[in-house]
Length: 248
Image 1: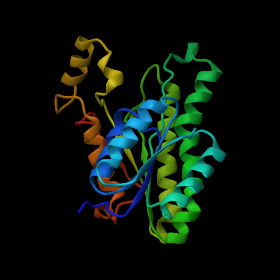
Image 2 (image 1 turned 60 degrees about the vertical axis):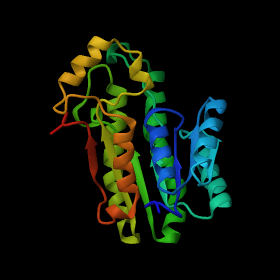
Image 3 (image 1 turned 45 degrees about the vertical axis):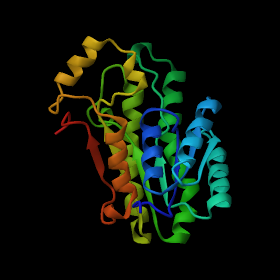
């Protein structure tokens, strides 16, 4: 018996890295999972089949979280298939790194729309359903960069700091209806994306972390599972740092 048995979760951007780890963990704990992807249908369908093999219902849908009407359609399709939506994990995100003096307006807008506006879109789209149910857990994937900043990532840091403020505000608005909203701020997480980086640089990053290692998608997934489940029923409006002590 998983702690999410009978619950339905929407996870945006779940074909790799952290999002994929969360989808797998949720399915292992009994949740039906609807997850979105942006481009690779083949990869998404393979993940869908893998999740279905765990004895839950999984559905991969191509959807752009930065598009408000697409998010409304996603919620509608999920309700048609599963009738309820108990959990939303806002994970969709991109980077367009560069120093501010070289950052184009397009690079700024793209990151803000995908990382921050998407959280507004999905939360707004699912709000009515959760209000009607008088229950729900929204988990937003932020970043330690949204707390401490990072040179060359002004757009990304601003989007993640925005998520933190949005999370705290929504928690105050929806708490009286038993809807919780929290954020997770991962630190250096080792994924497919970091595997292509220079090993010496990666080792220097590991050495600077008190726990002396990078995090895994599973580390983030376990924290997300806790916030999504009834085990965290009295926790809302919080930013949980999953960073190995990088921020103290």
